[in-house]
Image 1 (spheres, rainbow over the protein chains, first blue to last red):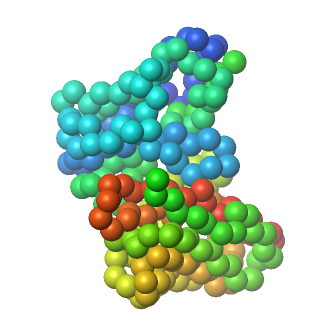
Image 2: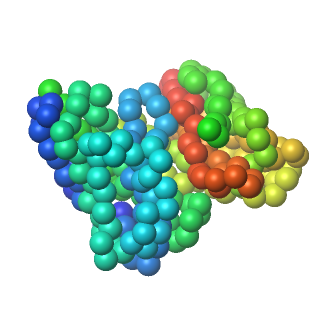
Length: 113
Length: 112
């Protein structure tokens, strides 16, 4: 079974620039999650999709972050404009159903200069 | 909002020693999941506990869900250097928003 695919693995940008991350979940997984993990902390949920609908985006900074999962399969997360405090690892995960065990991708390590 | 507290935050042990990490909540949980995250890696699912008082074992790892379903523990017997990782619990509260919330994790370092 192929795992969760994420790209890019690393990204370095300057503050106020924009960046986008891509995620392809495990085939058949209806639920897709985007997390932000700052060094030394647990993953913080940014947004959760059930198929192509948003289930929870209460912790997504909507003034700068956006995410979509148009066809209910792969997803993109965008930051525009980036701030220094956005430096983190962005993890995508998928699960068969809501609150079921999650499978994580390798993540994108974002550095803001 | 819902929080899960993990203790300790850090633990250093010598290879062969035992290790326990705890996950605590002030509210009743419907289920709890444990994950292992190696340095530079991503969280990997270990186990899910659903029933009050449930105990599950995976080789040297023992997972327990409290009788009141407000806490859980992960115990590793005779640690090995490969056990060095961050151990994360993630929990869903009963009723309410039913969100899965991750704790901050316990970073275990096993010295050879």
